[in-house]
Image (cartoon, rainbow, N blue to C red; front, side):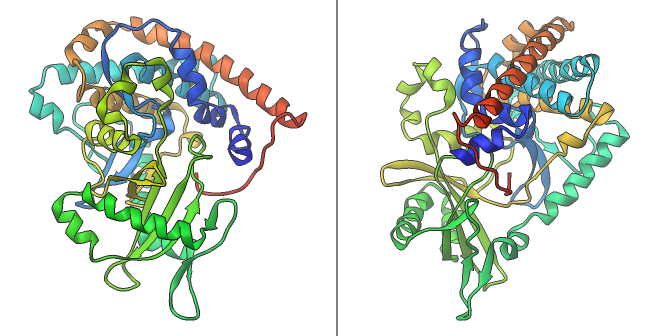
Length: 404
């Protein structure tokens, strides 16, 4: 936990990333239309990014579903615009520039809702964002497209093979083992290792028969605990190193603890749903529903009575360099995130009703720009309080470099 608070203290945006539970409380006191969809629950601008499909194409979409649940669509959109505002502050944006970027995000949401509401269900369901093909529905500024293509190149280099030498080494007996790099990467004891490996049996049962057969061709080489992200720090997350066709064919699986989503406390009816009783299954089912193309190795399992979900650790994933973006590229990425969020919501909700509420004018854009500016102010105050608490010793914090 000191590592988590240390990461949150790094900046107001880092604080916002780690404070999903704080914002959930805030959002629960705001008015909603009553139209519910499957929400991401943590749809900030850095939770949109690039990843690889089973066909090795690179697509762009939402890529974090730990907090996903059934809830008001407005909560996701407000989380997104607040993050756009706070990220803009850290990039040196003026108030006018922050307002413009937030309005772009909301206009992207409205634009795609209107577009999707006029499509056939199967057509809308099949849409996905191909990161290497320039979209025809919207104009992409050249500078923004160049940044996207550079990020595509990074995604293609982010593979199991490239991760192996960074986190593991070969022992004198020829066996591969994880490097001990506390507190980010730590070896686990033999008992924990056995439990994690045994949990993969239950996990495999949740895969399709074809991938279940494929997984049998891999053997486990080692298990470690790895701290990732900001909001996830403090939960159990294991990294499993497997090899298939020799030691030039590694596969990293992340076995990550799934806890009750932060919004559940304010959505009491959600906790009663049968599919939500195993939190790992909740996460993977939400991801399958909200992503157009997903990880075929998604599954769930249980260790010591605690729910987990399993996914590939490095399947050509990459994040947009939001902290380095300004002007047109930043505005377009905000627009794109809004459009992607609308597409995710449309897969489970009444897209025509939401589109009708949002309207054709920029009324909603302006209202949420005002909300985002106020929430940006609040986030800066909250962050300052955390920093003060750390300096006075009321809160413990640790700083360590590692994979975000």
